[in-house]
Length: 293
Image (cartoon, rainbow, N blue to C red; front, side, top):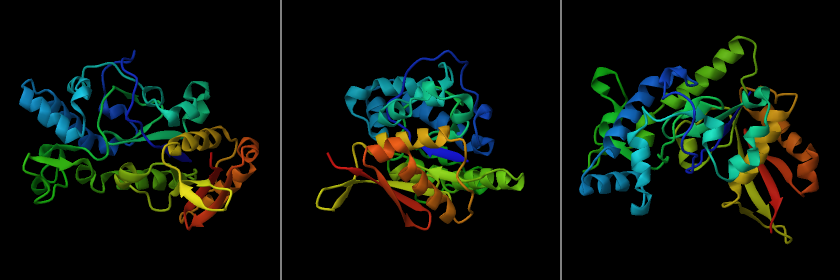
């Protein structure tokens, strides 16, 4: 079973691991895409002129006060690494409390990423800044004519950049589907619980993966999608699934997996005591409701 966490824009800097080795990351079939993204991001962020740095900030959707992120990206291949679960910070990772998870629990976890696609919990990665809605130099998309990428005509804008989503194309979906199929071929559990949302989910949706929606429940019975604390609740759910002795059932359509996830969320004492509830809201979708307040 694999639980994919949403990434965080905020990350710890530094680390004690050696520089980035792309072939050490989960889903090695993604190495060519990752390499193009890393090199294009380094080039973009290595600009020394004021205009070049302004263009880099604009492409990445960053404010001028966030210029230090350019230096992180420029040093991607030389800066120290640390395990992915220990690199990311923010509300989801506070709730996950990765430092207290045993190795077996960590092995069930992965993190979505605009730069890496998906990385395993203990994959060593450097600090960086790249969001799912960012743009990168068109070279990152490769050359469709030579089979080294899936660039599409007209994808680049006037600044010569393309969306991160267009760079990934179907690569991430195919890699995750391949991971699941290989697990099943060996008789192992290939269930995927995908806690990514928005732009990060769009980078590589997985057919049959179970998704989670979080809603606030009001006294009058109305509901509203949780925005600010959405990742907090997903971090709690990821922790519960990682620590459970039993994995969720592996159903190719996701139906039985979703039903089992809803049962787990309803039956977890800490969730029940906090007033959480859960229901299957689609063929492979679960909605977690939490008291508004």
